[in-house]
Length: 246
Picture 1: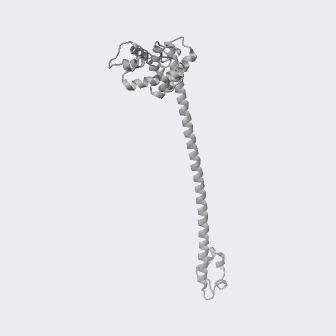
Picture 2: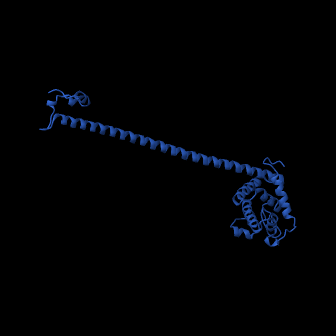
């Protein structure tokens, strides 16, 4: 029997097809060309399955690498955010320290013989509490200068004590410790100042209430001279640059 047309091409795809058709195993009554077609189809299906499996493995490998890259990128992003947070903390610390140093220099201008250790404690407490309660450190320093002259042991004739001359009843109200301690006195004074600012909405009335109590304010601006002294000192401190030069 002659080889069917195209058999040589089929043989290239599968070696078994190169055998003469009469030698091909086939079920009784099944033409040789049908058996060849079935065998060729099975061969193509097998090749397709192998290709699919190979493609699937490649896709899974690519997916795995993509996940690894995404994880690495996410880790780098977290690292950058942590670094940025640390840099922000460093900048804040440096800025806060610079402001404390500026406050310390301003106090030395107001009181040249001020004890340096006490001055730095005052500067740190004023900077911290003013930032916490939204007050101007220059104003608080001015109140301290006029009220006590930077003497933490000062006591007024009416019983006010400490750097900011806070009345003892505020100690219990604010839940603070010994008002003779610089930090406690400044914390109390800043809160009392903020309280009167909200009550009167006027600088002179606020300072008068701070010095003489809210009962001394009767809708006017008492001329006891206290508020003028504080405001004058406040302006002087605001006019001093960071280097401490007038």
